[in-house]
Image (tube, rainbow, N blue to C red):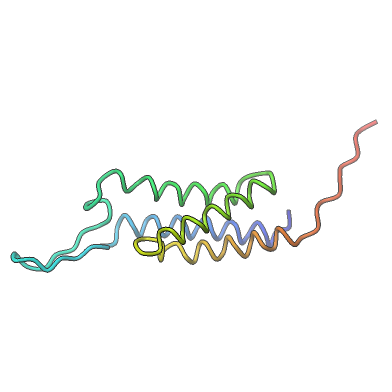
Amino acid sequence: MDVAHRNLLAAGAALDLLAVLACLVLPLYSSDGTDGTGSATLLAVNGAGALVPLGLFLGLGLLAWAMPWRVARLVAVLLHGALTVLALLSIGLLFVPAALALAVGGFRELTAPAAPPVPAPV
């Protein structure tokens, strides 16, 4: 694999990690109730179940970067993009930069020539 492909996929995985950390730390919910205004994190509002989609995003980003097989990397990139589109109304917007980096890396991977076969030892 070309170094540029690997760098773009690594950048996508790193952006996934940043987005997951932002989802865990930043207040994504706000309220204006009778007892005043307040804010809460994704984990505080949704509980441990919120870790499932975050783990999916992070796992797919890491798979797209670390898988040794070209087809598996491309499938991980496509699944990550589909998950980002599905989550756009909630946390998906935080994962758009990672999805774009993975998509560009996947496209460059797809358009790159395949490596020549390694001859068998005699």
